[in-house]
Image (cartoon, rainbow, N blue to C red; front, side, top):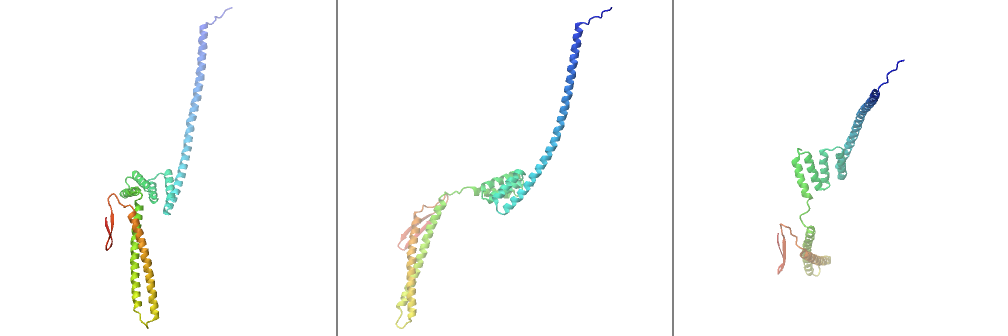
Length: 272
């Protein structure tokens, strides 16, 4: 009977390690293939999603364009109908959807019609910045200067116009009162003439003519008194307020009026 030799322990250990390494290698290889397959699927999926997204974006863009065209048309109609505030809102809405230089110009025109001159100047300037080579650039630049001048506050003090108006009304009262005094004097002369006519009547003259002349004299005398009294009152009040009101002057021009009473009447002197 023969006895087989017993394998050495070192050989057994090497075979075990080799088998273990091969198992690990097979497992790693399987995981790598699965990972690559998953990545390939992931690469295909975004491509399909991107195409769908492009279609959605194109559809949304067309909707925006349709809305912008409709709003622009309505904005022009509002502007022609002088509904400038509504037109301005529509132009701004269209500009947010589809920016265009003409919309900026239309906004400036709307602000101009609304008398918001500073905003109009700003939008005209913005239009020239977007369209520097526009053929009507010189005209728009002149419009900007005009808008800015209109937007500036008045150089005169706040109460200047009120003082000027009150002084003007006062002197108008003086003039009106003077005219009424002249009218009263004319009626007084007419009354004197009718009195002379009454004194010239003799016995046997027409009684109707005498009565008519008498009535005309009384009417002329009454009108003379009314015009004289009213004229003196209005002139006195006007003169009082004209002298009491502070003088109206500007930084460059000064006007002065002096009044003096002489033996021949009222003397008015002025330097302008």
